[in-house]
Image 1: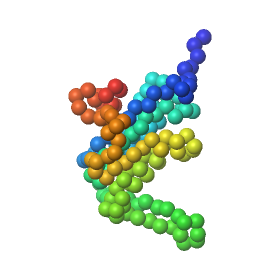
Image 2: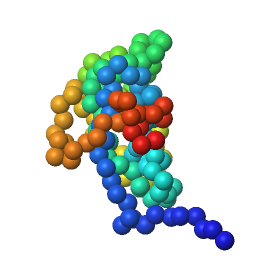
Image 3: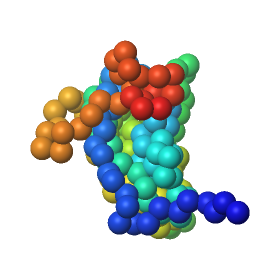
Image 4: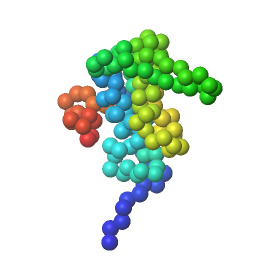
Length: 155
């Protein structure tokens, strides 16, 4: 009888990947980042463990939306008080905090529990191409001749 492989926390190797969001649709960037954070690109993926890698997203200010979403898409938050619903358009959010727009898109694609919050701590989003993680030697994800249609260098 074969048993399902379940990774142990000490067997997990974490890599650093960098995703360039310049000129790419927000959803495409967010799904690849969520996939890397969750660890679904690894053969040792285990649903109840955080097997994912660290992800750096650069050029968040140059991410694009298709259609009329730039004017029509709204982000909502509520203070908890009556009449406390706040709405901000995507265009306004992109002017002030483009990192937050990308961060919220990735957050919505991860599990909504403690495990998802732990995965989200491994995400770093930067407005331009400057980041402070050169010491971790991040590998580019989804670019170049070795990238398959799945998006990654080893997919």
